[in-house]
Length: 264
Image (cartoon, rainbow, N blue to C red; front, top):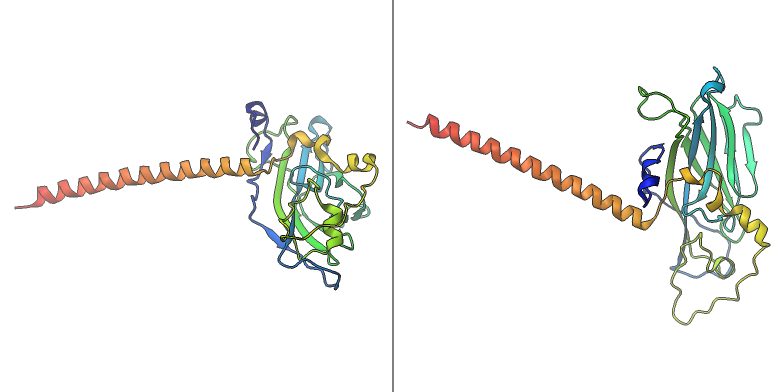
């Protein structure tokens, strides 16, 4: 799902992404000053990329893979996410991996597919409850009859919007104008506190996945892409409806001919 034709030709094997089908609401239990009827949403993508090792592949080491949680537009999500705990299969050394700074990802190698649990822990002013996401590690393309290739990885990603209702004003002030978030329209007359000074630019750079080494394979989740996909799907549906109407018309004509031929 990219805009350029070259990138479209290089698109990896990938499952159909989930576009805005999930919208997970979180809540915070403390009694700090909150803004009612306001929501902050954080678009997230989670999934995996798997590369076949080709001639280097062995019985137990056939693929190198990475599982991750990232911003939908590859922005730094550490402004909201404090750490991510990845739970791998028990056969791995240290199967519980705690990643406390971006990029929130784990890279390993192996041969088997299994479910990975990813638990997101948020900063204290965001939410006091963790969020668990689940992803089935995919190593092989959907068309398993085709030959394996080292040129294109298998990419499987899901989209979710994490929604934080009734945020406290401190959280709002800290994340205002941050590109990883969808910021709400504030009530008339409400003035935010001054923005909190950000951390050093080097840390921001590390959390920004726009220059990620695997970034060329990431699925693009954007409003424009969604509209293009919806338009393409609508055209396919309309073409299918037109085909069915032609078939119905043909059958009705045949029935009319049979009926006419059978009349005395």
